[in-house]
Each structure stands twice: as structure tokens, then as C-alpha cells.
Image (cartoon, rainbow, N blue to C red; front, side):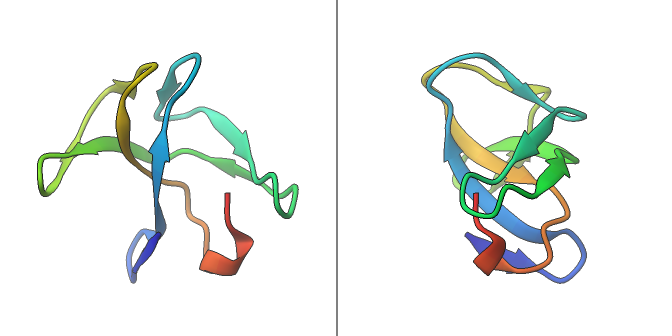
Length: 72
């Protein structure tokens, strides 16, 4: 995770099953808080926005999380 002052916490994720895309609703396993995914993308080596992340892909998501302690 890292923090961007405009987008909040940027989490690195590995998609194991299903598809993750902008507009999806996710919940933190740690805190049970719910978030809307506002951006997904792949690191190439810089952030490159994508329409979705599919199984086997590693990328990043931004979901307006304000503190990394809220963790996914």
C-alpha cells in the first residue's frame, strides 16, 4: 500500500478469481468497511489504468480509503 494525497490509499492486489473493475463494491476483511472501487490498473512499471483486473493479474486499486490501517 501507499498513500496518494488525492486518491487516498493505493492498494496492490492479486486477483485470484472473478473480475475487479471500476464501480465494484468491495469490503475490507480486516475492518469490514465497504468501499467503491474508483480506479483499477496495472503497474508497468508505473501505474497504467485499465478497465478491469482478471484472474492471475496483479495490479492496484484506489477506493477512497483514507488510512492504510483500514487495510484490505
